[in-house]
Length: 185
Image (cartoon, rainbow, N blue to C red; front, side):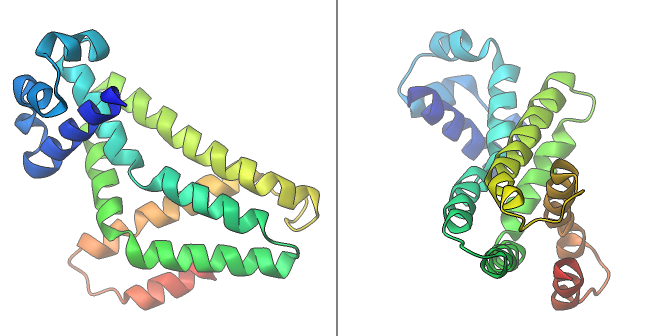
């Protein structure tokens, strides 16, 4: 729990002022520990930054996955599964703009930083793996077309959700409802 508090404090600092806003002494004070304790757990200031950026990248995602898992587990037919997935996607498209922006920012911070890039890649792999584990029983029931590479499909759909940031922060006048319709189609 204490490590999580330290990461949350660092994530908040990045959200407020970028990575430059991370001050080890301030983070330690907010988390109720000493700076050497932070260094013990994260190795360096950059280790703390990496942990905070990964937390920003995965923020809310695992909570969403848990809700998706519960909803999918309650399905008894292929039609119910489709309904759950469409509802989940529609909500994600409409409600997660800030989360997508944070993910994009964290991903951009990984440029030329192999440790952060590897940590974000690992987090992304975990996200896709969790979603695949949720959907695998649906495949076994015959609700997912045979021959579909579930991992590739889940990764593609997840990247489409993240890619919506382009219309949310771009200058072109793209109709979000039309983008969502095409994505769901």
